[in-house]
Picture (cartoon, helix red, strand yellow):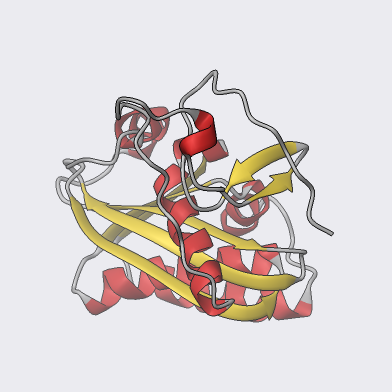
Length: 205
C-alpha cells in the first residue's frame, strides 16, 4: 500500500527533479528526546510508483536530532547502493539536513562533518540524486519508525490505542498514550487520535 502522503510529497519536487524512469523514494526522519538524548531514525523506502519496498529504523543511543537525521539519510543511501539501485529521491523534514546536503548551509559541527562526508561519498555512487524538505505532517510513517526505535532502545513497549470506530469506546476506556512536546505541540509516541478528540494532559516530572 502506498505511503499516504507520498504522492503529495513527490509532486512537490517532481517538477524540478527530472527523475529517471526507475528510482527509489526515501522518507527519512531522525530524532532525539532531550536533544541530546535517546535517539533513533526511521526510513520508509518506496519505488517510483509509491509501493513500499523497505522500512529501516535503528536506536542510536545518546545523540542529537541532527546526528539522527544524518544517520537516517545514510541508511537510505546505503540501502540504495547495496541493493544495486542508481537513483534516489530523499524527502526529509529536517531543513538543516536538506540545505547542508544541497550546499546552501555549511557544516560547522565536527561530528556532522564526518556524517556529511559519508553521505556525499554514497551520493557520488548514484547516477541521480534529489533531496527535498517537507513539513513533519508529510513524514508521519518515518517519524513513527524513529520513535519506535527510541522506545525499543529505552526499553519501552509501544501500546496500540483502541480503534476510535469500535462501539462503546469512550476516551476514558482508552489506554494511556505517551507523548512529548515538540515545537510547542504534543506529539503522540505510541498511537494516534482522530482530529477533534478532547484530551487531558498530565505532565510527568
